[in-house]
Image 1: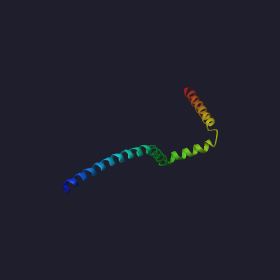
Image 2 (image 1 turned 120 degrees about the vertical axis):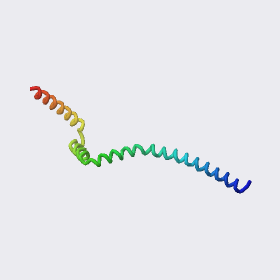
Image 3 (image 1 turned 30 degrees about the horizontal axis):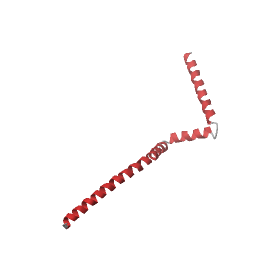
Image 4 (image 1 turned 45 degrees about the horizontal axis):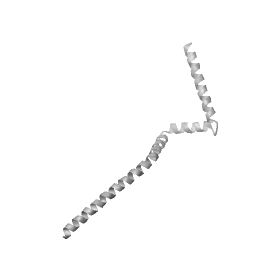
Length: 95
């Protein structure tokens, strides 16, 4: 075989190997990106919350107001209080 023909076949062989490696790499990258999507979403939410100081402060105030335990009872009392206030407002609005 001539040296030029041998060089051409070697080149074709190397190109085929490169193509196979690119395809394998693309498969691995897709899998990694798929696994990281959840983390990306979480970071986006954290970024949005941090960029809004009022939202962050209101969340901290709620945590302090609710305390360690009993948040369910406080929530249900708040719902009852809200419903009562709304009903009273509707009654006084009619008069």
